[in-house]
Length: 149
Image (cartoon, rainbow, N blue to C red; front, side, top):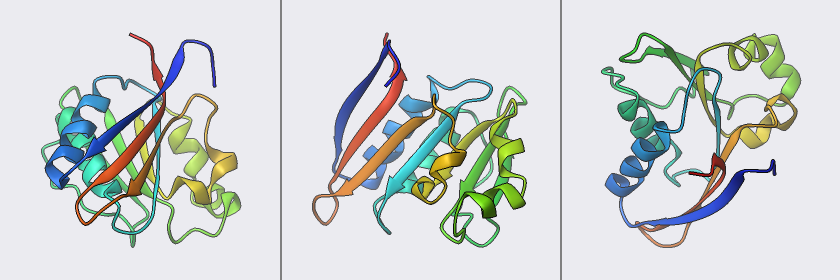
């Protein structure tokens, strides 16, 4: 992990708490930021992405982009949020073939669900958030790569 960055853990006991954590994460993001989300189906990746979008001032309803793979939203400061779902991709080559490296290499903010499917496409400075289901509505959320305050 790069110097000046840390690993932290949080516990969420509801989708609303996961959303609120996403809003807090959004305050650390700027042009070119990449957030790599990991976790099994139903762990709360999309709720976290919705919180990040809400914190960035996205007014549109955020849904899972599984069938479109990449959804694009305008933020309140007119930058772009790319919500990417790599679930249907087989590997990094698939991501490259749809222009993924151009998106995450640009000036927008990228939030990538199922990022473990495209590990070589993620930049070294990506913020990685792993969500583990610990109960019917509880989650352990591990965040790596946010800058130290």
